[in-house]
Amino acid sequence: MLKENELQILEENYEDAIRFFNNGLFLKASELLKDLAVQKPTTWQIWFSLAKALQKSKEYKKAITAYNIVLVLDSTNTKAYFYLAESYLSINKKEAAKEALEKATKICTNDLLKDQILILKNQNGL
Image (cartoon, rainbow, N blue to C red; front, side, top):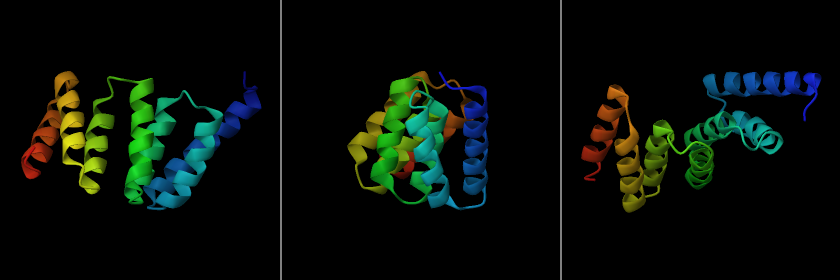
């Protein structure tokens, strides 16, 4: 169990990582998020943020791994399926992208995300 001051440091580091991400410093954000993921391996939000930072850094294979960890921790995370599909498409793995989008479609309740899924499918002939 983490002590209160350790939790505060983790929260501050997470805030710093998000600030780096929001300022386009994706590699710096991913470095900090990797450390946080080691310290809090069952927190899907950290893995999701790490995956997004890796995807933005064009580290698609690493992003795919991180999105898959998100989905182990939260199997109903439709955004993770969507971004996983984008990452697969970035490395030309259309079948894997199609599977991710099909899973997202089955569980998605957000109309805007449903539209984004449909657009991504149509743009890529899935």
